[in-house]
Length: 411
Image 1 (cartoon, rainbow, N blue to C red):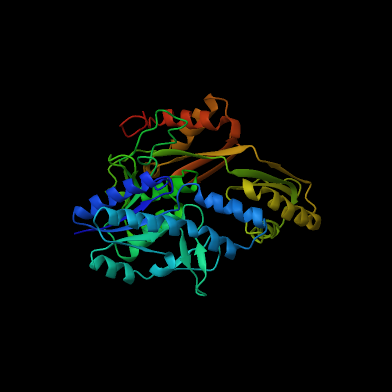
Image 2 (cartoon, helix red, strand yellow; image 1 turned 120 degrees about the vertical axis):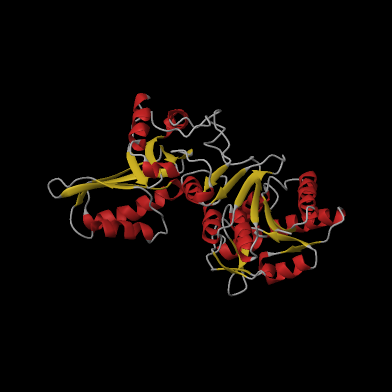
């Protein structure tokens, strides 16, 4: 008998009929001889509805009350699912994050899990219950409800799987696996059978929305295999696992893109020690995360510094930099919201030297200008004009033959 953790997102439980469909899947897994824990999101649209209500009541509401409100969506879905499972003849019990003892820090609306006490789940499993757990939520040391941020149910599921520990964590969603790129903009996108934790972490951080990045971090840390699959079909999905367990050894495994960044350039900064530290301290003090950074060669004691920030934080970043500029006296600060980041990712890039040049040449053939470049051991990212995003994705998908079954080796 194995221990299986299954996670179902909001779309999967978006109606009574879909909740009943999930119940049938869960019961089938139980009757195959497994102990089953199910982690469930709020019904699709419910969290957004609650946030809208909060903003109508008080647009400047505090984050503790925000968490108290939006966490109620999961309470509805877990109780309904438990009822549906009981209707099929199996015992089920629903548990909130606080009842499972999913402990977090106190950073409301984006809390991080610090500990999970899995004893109550284990007792219920031993008594032949299917355990239905509210995703997305936990409790801090003060006993206040916290939420984990968008996609937090993925993290909840993997954390529960690690605490038990489970044999596998199945992430059910409205897509049937992880693709070489977004099928909505590239009809040649191919579903991957397996992908490494490292590659999935890069893809998630670079814009792929199938898995929440913290869930992949948990899975990698504790060695929990993830199976990403559709809740609307019985087809096999994609296994996220250790690198040595991955069968596909392509140079490039996927192309990711993101339109959620903005670019800022500070021109004519005095080139002296401590200036860069002052700039990024001013931004960090606002809680803004900086991604790509480029500094030009100094000319006559001045230099230019370019970096990217989340588009939602763009205005706040500019405001912080204007205050910095009054103290330092840079020539000017310019920004650009109309950018996108396209990236290629693959563990095979570690042993192939010309991957970046192929990427740059492919973009150049389409007259797509590269504004910024960032690399790691298994990825190359380029900032381009936003209007070329979809073209760039298709061009790179073709360049590395990601539609085929080969290893996209060099010619």
